[in-house]
Image (cartoon, rainbow, N blue to C red; front, side, top):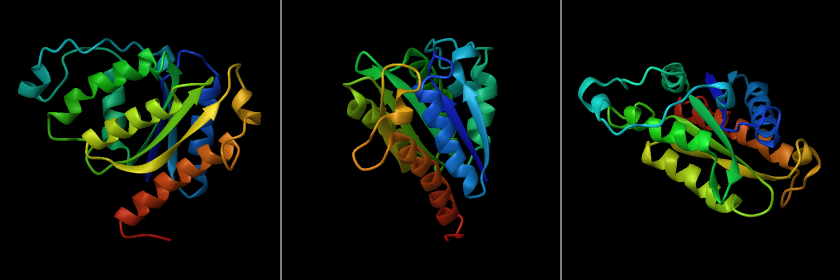
Amino acid sequence: MKVIGIVCSPRKGGNTEILVREALDGAKSLGATVELILTGDKVIEPCNGCDTCIRTEVCKIDDDMQEIYRKLVDADGIILGTPVYWINVSAQAKLLIDRTYALLYTGQKLRNKVGGAIVAVRRVGGGQVLGYLYMFFTIHGMLIAGGTIGYGWKKGDVVQGDGMLWKALDEARAVGESVVRLVKRMEGDAD
């Protein structure tokens, strides 16, 4: 089983990355093969609405999204992490989400994959962004294993930051574990 974690933050080593790494550790602890993808150092152009992908089943934009498409399609579980920027996902997350149009309208290639959401926020907008990520999963026909919001401003704040019941790191780890458990259930291998 393959689970990928996509960090949609320009801030290397920041709170989003910390939480996604913890979620991947949770997935790995239950036997998944994991991979981290950092979009901050990738070149992802915006979707230009040309609809070439609908006619050819391939996005014609030649950038780093081509590699990410393959990883998304090959994964059983996808953990998507973003910081909150102006009560919304980051620019990196929006680019990635928009470009998955090519996967949706060419055979729903993410259908029945399992999604987990990670949101890092300073103080407001976390719930809205978490809902946005859930809607992204739903539109693609994915199954939602859950998500979490980690609060912090400076790099590393989420390590000490408390969630509602657990610390943010515990919640992130639980997201990764939930992704694996749901994939196993779908495969008829529930523990």
